[in-house]
Length: 372
Ligand SMILES: Nc1nc2c(c(=O)[nH]1)N[C@H]1C(S)=C(S)[C@@H](COP(=O)(O)O)O[C@H]1N2
Ligand SMILES: [Mo]
Image (cartoon, rainbow, N blue to C red; front, side, top):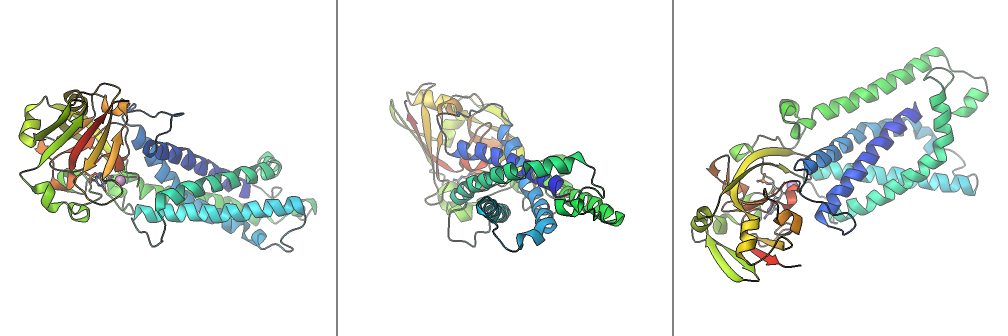
């Protein structure tokens, strides 16, 4: 039973780790793994999986701890060097796993009662957790093999000594273990069903525990950072707004009317928030590639994007060349045929395929085109 719950937990953690890696690299690009705008749905899937498997880890981790907790208090705590290393790795594993799952869930609710930056610490501790898991799996592999060789019946006991003693537990114990596995499976199913609707829209009616519903908000789209939170209520609504475009050809200013006179393009793209919700919309506006050309840039240019927002971690972002040149990467002016709502980034915002929600900058003030 312990081996089985451990396997599920290991798989969930691995998926969480790999999808988290994708999210981190997208926000902090590295040369060895250039992530691009294709496939358009990529981030929606990887981040949806990241949050769904993270949530599934809550009951799995509790079940796993419950099934082994007596051993956590074994005496003496250390019986030798190898045993000491193994016990130490378990301590690190339990602490880091609890830390990752709880801070991840708190981030879903944008609740930060701690004094450190969430993303940096969540990223660092992910490596600690995955390392401790690797050690734990390596140490436990023989026991896991033995466990899988037998059914979850009387002969398989997590505690091998008991089996050797011929001290086979009564049949009811086998039933209890099977029941515990089924119960854990049901708990995982239940937490998934009440949250997955935040990204799988046909199930949105069931998403009673998801902090964001994919259709709750102006223009049928949730809002993460509001105009008020960003402090742009006045500047974004100012009719005198114009976009500053800076590049090798010089500085150009374009007001909304000028942007509307340029070639308009449509793209159906989703906002996929790091917090796991995602929602699709039909966007329309000017291709970033056209603005890059106007500024004297090329297909190899990158674009720095500045928001009207004066503070906040996401007031400034960068479009790598592959994104800036993509036909569906837009400076969006409209959603579903209507002018962008102020909350969604009026007068203009970035929308690009396969891009983390945090990078889909709202209330754009300035684009700086840089040649590589
Ligand atoms: N300027 C600015 N743009 C921003 C943000 C922000 O904090 N500031 N938040 C981002 C995040 S985290 C998400 S998920 C999307 C959400 O877009 P929406 O509010 O239109 O749904 O906007 C992004 N754009
Ligand atoms: Mo987000």
